[in-house]
Length: 253
Image: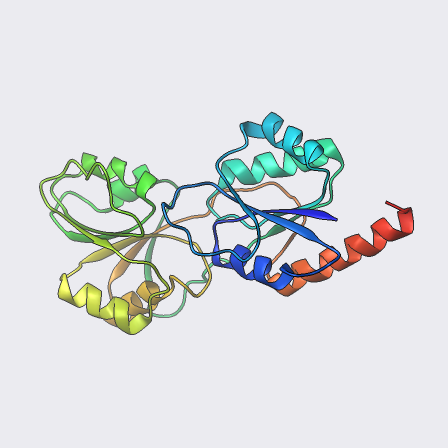
């Protein structure tokens, strides 16, 4: 069976590794191409978009994809919706791998925001030192609040830089521990963090550090996604694929 994994997350890479080498599966992992030098994925990889729902439908049919797994980032709303629609149109079994969101704990000082624009407004007018823990494509709206000093950490360099008078750029690839992120926050005298509720362990260090330091976090809520079938673990995806293989064998596919 030909399997297509829509990736770009740690879970997608782990899933690919779990399936690599299986004789009963041919696995392709698709990356959006937002990271210049992605980590090795363990299976054949394609990079770039599909051209919307129609392009993905064409790919599923041309490559005779037998199952589609959406293991993209929880905030990758467009590709997730396109994947669900394309799989339904092609009659391809579909499953989303969605890591649980972080839950607010005692001591957390979260200010929830429904959009990046709302997050900008939540920072207020008084100058603050802000750690922007967002993707490169999501930080441009903060130019509307140039009074703040921004710390931006990203895998690839920010180009062009933010059009603000005070910004610090760091390039680094996670995961980051609580101790590492606490040292970072203390070194740069951060007053507030802006983050997405991504879930998972790889980027939770800053949230735990903020709790320990009593720092507020402007937390972007996850977008609403379709009611597509979903699971929370790689093991659950593997079990689902094994069931799909058995069902296909019964049908004589």
